[in-house]
Length: 229
Image (cartoon, rainbow, N blue to C red; front, top):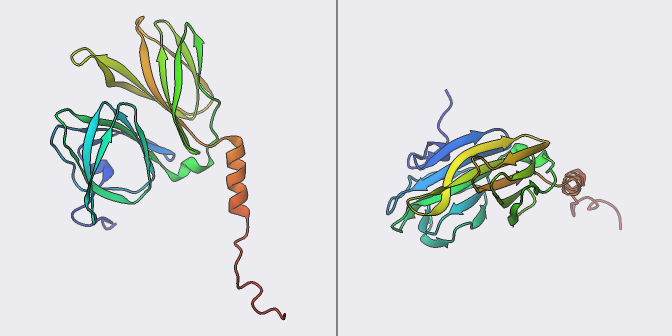
């Protein structure tokens, strides 16, 4: 029998009710996170590095398992990359939902090669790089009605739609995984479509540099300790 590796007061992130796992493979796990006003999560663990994309204005209080509460204020579209090992409780202190897209960077991501950058293929639109890191970049993509955009995998595309009650484009319509190669995205029903694209992996040059670092011997001051002067 496999024993639970977590203390009694800590749950795995995939079992925390506010974190909804919608896609998973050996490269990434993708969660949609929603915390109602003045609600807090269970104490949960982040076992891998992760990137958070915030949808809408937000203010939360994060309390680490053995630390003091810290306040965090976010704007719509903010991205935050956090290191593995965080165990915390998150409380939403605003009168609106705290909503974010959370991408866990799994070990299988290390050997992925990134595709070329996004481009508008037809009928116009806008592309903006809003976060760039060696393993992941985040793009905001907006296509005009009947427009098309070209996305090269590996990537995750989160299409958003406008919530007519709040007049904000921050509701997730669907999630698409692009394994590799080129994929053409289209604006449907003649409407402007916005998407957040998480492009994964390292460039060819970054992969080569990472492999070179891994192959380099570790220099130790004791190597020549027994050699005569």
